Length: 472
Image 1: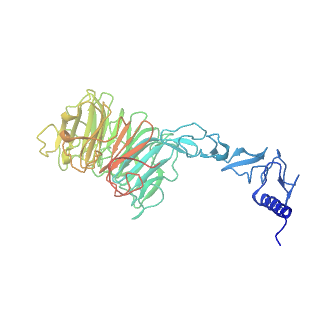
Image 2: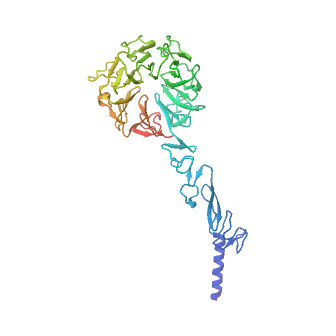
């Protein structure tokens, strides 16, 4: 027999009440601890508080937040540490990770030009490139390196085949760094207290060495690294060098290597330093340049060249004045003069040094103007290529590719110099063997070139034909 209509209505009402007990409370219907429907149950009332099934709140759990139920609504009470509610939409909870969000770094609306780390804006302060690795000083005082690491030159405690890193890693035990320098398989950093710390393998190393202070260096304001040796300019203007000294790189009048820093003879007023593979140059207040060390290719610029004509103490570069910036490359040197012209001398490989066509490959033991590079702001010298920052904001490079213009052609002469794609008015350009990096005004780093060791820093091993952002 079919049930009576009244019985059907009663059954339907019971089903609704039962469903309410499972799904959660609506306004005015509360739940007791046994999840059976009642009025005035023991887990709250309409308009009551507490986290749980209250009013229309359901479970009242908001992302990355402490929350409570009030008047049937889920209300945000506080954000988890490191998170923030920046959109004002409560159901999203605390949607921003303020420790890493570059648009809301530390607090909502605090934007970083480059990167946010540990709730602080993060930017590079200096960049230097070695043979197939790169290092940078960062705004938090850390030093990070990436690329080739066979000899511990990244300073992260690892070394050997397979120890390369395609993104930046921190140098262990090194803080308060403001400048970095690299060369070959060796790297150094200048700290805020004027000390210099180095790691990797110098010419005197028996095995990869962790970061440690250089003995005999204090009150340094600049540090540079060649292949197996380093030099520091002190606040007094004196220059001290350490490491290998086979070619007179230390400038102390001997060929004796030294693990402790020794003073460069007669150099007491230097205002800038630059080191090549085995030669060093210093700019003096009178805008003259003095160099010492290996001179096989005429890279000292004193009018001589060849085997056995290196200089154990600084000698003046001939016929050169009004210099405002110096850059020593592998076996050559370049300067920028006050009239914005560029002058170079030394090894002529890949058209690195020229005094106008024809480019016959002849090494130059004296400065020669690079006529195609008028209007230069400064110059960077690598092992196989040269780049100039121009007054119009462009960066122009020549030598062995990739040079950053998106092609794989070789532009060996200054007259063939190409403009680096998408790079406008960087504040610094640094060169390695066959890769390059630029630091922009916002603190971001952009690199290009050979990347077989991960030295470009974008997480890949693929050559970059145009500048790519270094992953912070």
